[in-house]
Image 1 (cartoon, helix red, strand yellow):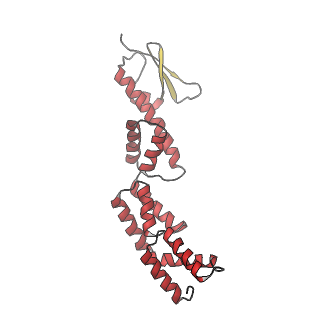
Image 2 (image 1 turned 135 degrees about the vertical axis):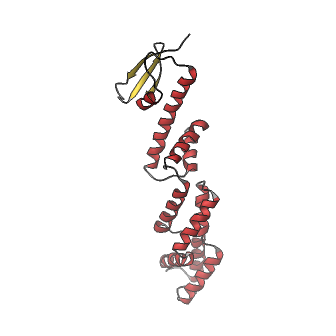
Image 3 (image 1 turned 60 degrees about the vertical axis):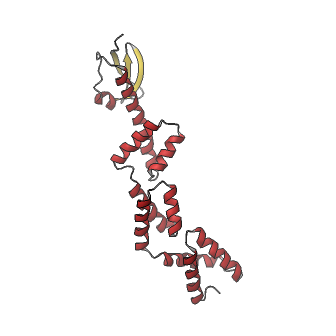
Length: 214
């Protein structure tokens, strides 16, 4: 039996959406842009492949709109978006299509994301090289991009000076503690912030010269 589009009706609650009927049976709801793009019209014969293509495009549109809404809250890496969509149980084919489209449109760009993450981190909650690298890897950023971002980050600010600034502020909080406890807590604090043991040792030496640490 031939399949023929018998009606394309505007939805009352969603004026930009259409209800597609084939052989007088409702098949699916579609965004009007998909109807126009696929040149769907009443009286046209349509095969199963075209129906599936229309449904897939509608699924892509819905998922794409969902991701665009996520991106209004904060930038995200491709991995973050992929993990979020996998958590929603979307099919792999659908996920990759959406990510590919948004990448082409410039809404998903791991390089831009990584630089933005780095700048925000160093401005609002400074961290060392090791922790910055670790966070970017957890975001799924490629190693080459991470290396580029790290070089960019610490060409703008000296990591040791950054650690020294944090240490001075932290020592004010530890002012009532004894010397041994202060040093132990400061060492742990700087380590958690991503600074290497070598950097921390140099910071301790500079603090001794400033007479802020014994």
